[in-house]
Each structure stands twice: as C-alpha cells, then as structure tokens.
View 1 (tube, rainbow, N blue to C red):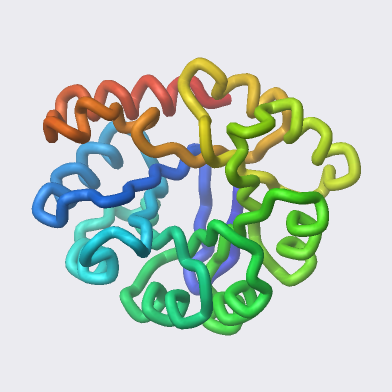
View 2: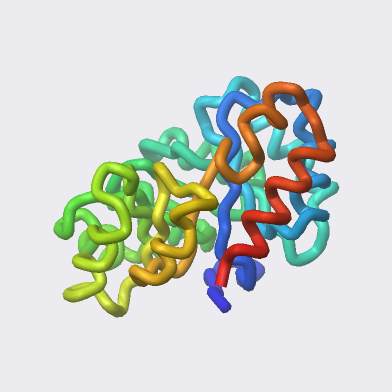
Length: 211
C-alpha cells in the first residue's frame, strides 16, 4: 500500500492513476463515477484541459471516500496555486521544478513530480516529492526503470507514457510502485464515444492486471 502524506493521507491500494486530458466537462461526472466504481482509486485532470479547475471544484463533493481527484500537467508555481486552490487532492507535474514541489509541500498536498534523467529523479525526491513520475517512460521502457532502481531503490517510481495492458506487468516487475495511463486505461474508443459500459470494462481489466 502507498501512503501519500497530506491533510488527509492518501492510502493508495490500487497502483494506477487515471490521466484525463481534454475530457468533456459535461461527461466528466459520469466518467469519474464509472471509473471509481470499476476499481480505479485516483485520477487526474490535466491542467491544460479546458475548465480543469472548474471540473475539480464541481466534482469534489461527488468523490467517494477513499478515492482521489487531482490535477496533472502542473508545470510551474502559478499553475500549482491554481490547482491547489481548486481543491485538488494531489498534483502531478511533467517536469522537475523544485519550487512547485516546495509549494505543494508547504500547502501539505502530495506531489508526484515528473522526471526523466537520473539527476532529475534524485532532485525531485530530495526536494520532497512523494513519488517520482518517470516520463515519458515509453521511450526506453521497463528496462530503463530497472536501471534506475539500481541506485534509487528507495525512491517510489511511477511509470507514465506508453503504459498499456500488454506491458503493465513488465513495468511492475521492473520495480515501479505505480503507473499512470490515459486512453490505454479508459479505452480510446470508449472515451471518444462516451461509452460508459466499455469504459468500465477497460478500467476493470486494467486494475485487475495490477499486482
């Protein structure tokens, strides 16, 4: 179980973060509840989604106990402030910005910081990121995670970018503590067609494949 410390510690037993970019605001409530009911525990709406902060604010009261709704693609402190002011339970960055990490820590909100190189991974962890998102992971795959785990075996890594149902187990075998996924988790066609039944099936299958 992952425990991300915050105002209300996030107890993550399902090591998958759902990533939603460009999601339709009107469709989001049904999508969110369907995904949570299918077993997903945490999801992020990316900051560059139109109305992202409004989506968070409007749906916080609908989030079931033990589920978490955050904001991703937080690139700088201005965006971090907007994300946290919206009520996001956690933030995720695509880059290593120690100011963003510090800002989130000061507000007592978990941050999953993006990194790619060994230096960025260690920098993010050293400055207080609860987890480090290796992104874009698909460029080098599970073998890169395995190499990073050599010197950084005490750092909780999250694989994001190119994670699919087919390679999911490979990433966990390589040593990640969690993964983040978008269309491969929810189903590209299901998202496009707003097909909740198929979306639920995709999420359930993905979650059940996790260790």
